[in-house]
Image (cartoon, rainbow over all chains, first blue to last red; front, side, top):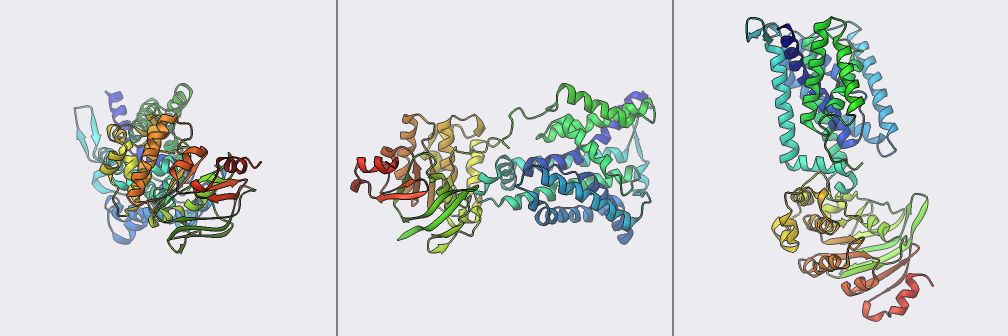
Length: 291
Length: 232
């Protein structure tokens, strides 16, 4: 029963990884940018939530109403003001720029918030649980996290498949230059994609911040989980990303059951197995995209 | 009335000069063809008019307005649409979605899904299919239909016949008069001299980035065209 419990808890955590991974794969899909600052932006969102909570007295989950738009605005400005200038000169410049951005964010956070670790306190919801059987209980917060993650992924899927904006984003992702021949402003699409990505990152950052404490330099560790979820699930599929995130969470849950030293290792091992035997990911789109 | 005027334009492809002080005029309502051998600069010229390639010097005037400093998506909004070489349909979108993306600029006009599928019935039959699985001819029809959805006043067609069977090319060219009747001025690039002469009111011949011949098809002799085409 302990094992069932471990798998269940891990699966619930997977939603957050899926959100992190979605931001990463959206940005890669539309702009071909590998955003190395993604993990640090996640931590940034959590710190922004700390400040919003302090200033407004809201709970961290309610604070999302401010943190998400703030991060989306930041994403738009970041793309327009910084990342756009690194595009069109090969794959290396954007990677270097996001690498630099990661360092800038870490040091900004250190100088503003000091090196102390912080937490976000969501109150009773953190310890509430629903008892499924005498031996299995699931936490309300992890369940809520997964529900929110799935809701965001469904929303994103609908946006991409049913709206004119989504069509324009997918067309830009296929072939940005040809998209401009349709009257689509590709740079605007890039900025919108980055805004959406940082919106999902903000949600992930706050939920992770409620779950565990965090410090200014924890970003890169988050980035690895996001990468792993993308690789396990396969690029270009939102549902693959969700399942990749859940599998990563389950692996970590099982590792945790083996001992406190193993959750991260178990996740990495699953990742390596997928990389070795199915490098395109478990749910990759069959058809290769044009680059 | 002159819809498009290209005056003394020079463009570069990397470090290579692809166009040397090229000037052409496209009167509204006419169909104008640009012919020339491989590498003569035909596609660069169309790309330059659409905004994909920069003009280093010279001027491009559309409907009395300078457009050479506008981005390509802004030129679409004014009514300049390019059907690019190699079709370039969006492979992860369905046929219908490709057409709908074409109407992104929200210009008003006569072309909608119904009109385009009437022009190319095959697109209606394949509406839900992925554009990636279409044949070359179907993709070309889709690329033209997609450009029409932007309600162009000037339609630029780059090598419609490239890699397609003659019978398919003929089908596509049969659509041209209806596109013109609906109000579009057409500027097309074509390697096949006979097709170009038959379809157009005016012809320009490019050789190594320079205009070497201009005139109406009926005023030009086949021999004259062939000699300038190959630069003999």
